[in-house]
Length: 338
Image (cartoon, rainbow, N blue to C red; front, side):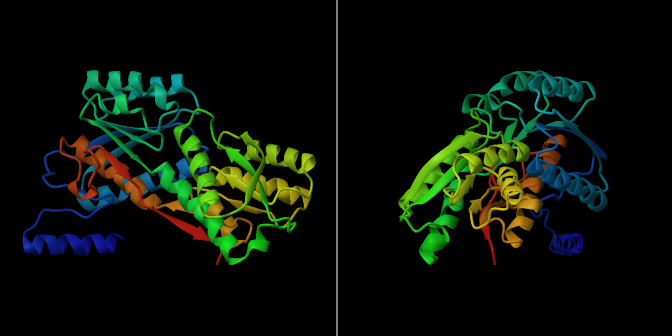
């Protein structure tokens, strides 16, 4: 990637242009400021998807420094699921003189207090992964959001099952009764993405002609361990009944797989969302029918590109084509077993 970047830069210099490439690269007009400080608060550092984004952000910062000669201090903090902790982290970022803050909210409905602090300190904010309510996003022109469209994620997830059913109905209707009996593992009950993913994944199955019947469902809060415990319970309550497990994310799908492995149960299909590293490994191993990928490099690259530009007092990079000047939606795709 670095070689491609250098080649592109020399080409742009040669033709006298100052435009930049997408991702982690520098924006036009930099040069005066030689260092930037970016405060990053994660809702939970042990969330696999968020941890993947963290790693990509760190890569972006290193690459940016090497290519542009601008020192980047990336101060990453883990709120560990506590909104109070995250509020304190925001205050700390402000006291340390951060140029911009990137916040993965613990509670999307509690963003207002953090925005108040950011506005008072005149520090731009890039929210990601958990979208604040529209009223909060509209309060200031220095608020941005990077994420994936939850409805698109769900439709893609549902289409994995639809395509499998169209190809081989018996692979899903394991007992041959003409109905695919499923259980549902959901994220947080109040989380917008969880609600949307659940609604549109199931709607896609129905619209695609898959004859489904819900056995039960439960809240596993995006967590592998909680999903594993629920799946173990369901296997005992509904033996030889479950044929499909629909999961709001990969971590919960992996938890269900853990329970299936312990019970030595095979044949049940599972689908997830996020395409985390262990999720992709499960797909390759044939344990997960499929998942939905948001390009993590582009996702983190968009967060970092906006943050770096705002840290330097510049407009958000035009090549990101932000919706309404504030929203970046990461592209998504299906990943299925080969």
